[in-house]
Amino acid sequence: MSESLAESPAHVILIGLPGAGKSTHGRRVARLCGRPFVDLDRRVVQVAGRSIPQIFREDGESAFRALEREATAALALEPPSIVAPGGGWMLDPANVALVKPGATIIWLQVSPQRAVRRMGARIRTRPLLRNVDPVAALEMLLAARAPRYAVADVVIDTEVLDWKGVAAAIRAQI
Image 1 (cartoon, helix red, strand yellow):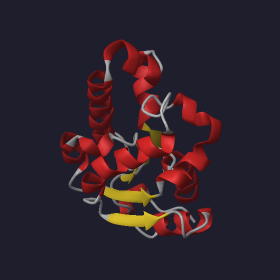
Image 2: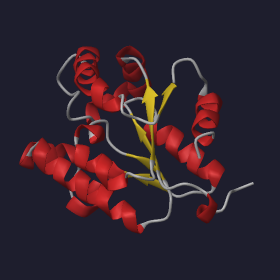
Image 3: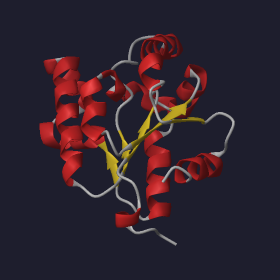
Image 4: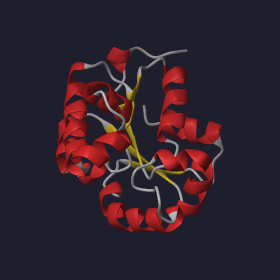
């Protein structure tokens, strides 16, 4: 049974490293709860008319982050959704300020090794992970991002739960 959007809290934002399952779990939970699913990276691509690797290559990470902030601000005009931003979304405190108070931020924790296995060949589409040792790169990203991820309202360890367990843990926060 799907709950009424008016009775449910604002957006649920899923954060974590690339490969944590933000999009995969987000789509599933949105379907189960009858909420819209928002992939912020796809929104940025639609607005920019270019892929994320192109944005990084042509304009740099700061330009991508500015587009990401604009996509986050647009959420204020939308019904409560399950939102999957990129892995670096939490690095910008302005993003969090745009959705708080109200939104529930959930950190989907995953080890760099497991994240790399989950991404498989898709890892080549990740600008920060191309042409480098992806495990080492994710370890560095995690070390840099963990303090920001730690401000999440809820932490879910995706390595100890199957997809149904992760979905149930997310739904419990809605």
